Amino acid sequence: MNKGNQDSLIPFAIDLTLEEVRRRAEVVAALGPDWDPVAALQGEEEAYALLYSGLDAEQQRTYDLLVTNGVLPHEGPGRATAH
Image (cartoon, rainbow, N blue to C red; front, side, top):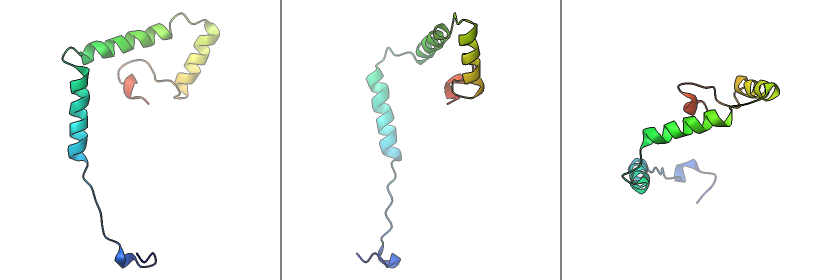
């Protein structure tokens, strides 16, 4: 191929939409019929609350600083999408 001539290039495109749908279906199938996304999210919320509970004053200041600077997500709705 002539590297100096753009006319010799052939356009090439791949639509991965179907592959992405298949991949997502496989993930959901692998999770199984007993997977409860609401319960999983509630469990994550409880674990997060427990992780940052019982902080002393200095730890709380550090935590607040990290939240303020966007290093850690804020508490409340939408926290999971804050990253």
